Image 1 (cartoon, helix red, strand yellow):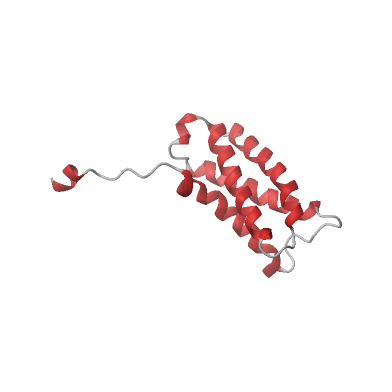
Image 2 (cartoon, rainbow, N blue to C red):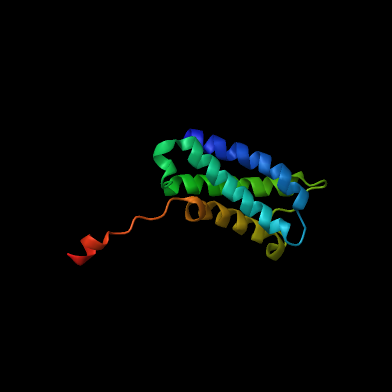
Length: 124
C-alpha cells in the first residue's frame, strides 16, 4: 500500500504542474484533474503489483482519489499569485469532483471485464 501511495503521489505531483497551466480555463480546468485521477489510479494499481492489476481493491482507488485531490489543490496553489482552494465553491469544487471521478473510473474503463456466471450454471 505504501508503494502504491508513493507512486500515486508522485504522478499527482507531476500532474499538478500540468494542471496549473489549465486553472481557470473553461473546459480543461475539469478535464485535466479527471485525467490526473486516471493517472493516479494507474500508478497506484501498477505499483501495488500483479495481484491487484486484475481488479484493483477499493483501497487502491481511494488512495488514488486522495492523491488526485491533493494534486488538484496543488495545481491551484502553483498558479502565479495562487488561487483560493474553495472560494467560490461553484468554480473551485468541480475540478476536485472530476479528480475523484477520474480515479474511480479507472477500474471501470480499463479493468478486465467482470466474470459472469456461465450459461450451464444458470440453467441448473
